[in-house]
Image 1: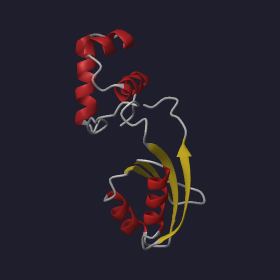
Image 2: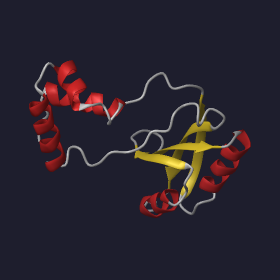
Image 3: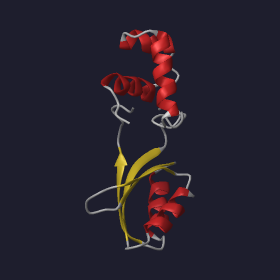
Image 4: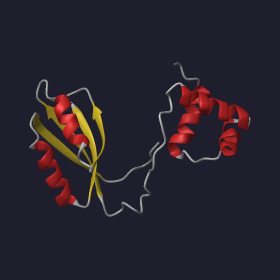
Length: 143
């Protein structure tokens, strides 16, 4: 499905806050409420919007450490590594990437020591060749 520029703007607003009232979205997009509701239903029906989620406020996790863990996987072990990482609640998202690494895990833990232990746990998984961890200092914006 091809997204229109208006669809892209609508999705950007919903990424920032999926609970934004339809009337507010309509005002920002200069559309009617009915049109916005129809676009949202169409995007849901066509699988563009697959669901909605919760984003926890910065103050809730201000004492927690967030990091990117770059992971290199041995040949034909990616599926098993992905399954193992999915079972770790500290792993918030996992991305397949191009370049020197195969996966990037976005993780959250209670402190530097917990990140260190998590990195070791990931490194010990069968099929993981190496990891590289970068602690996230701040998030400038998120959609």
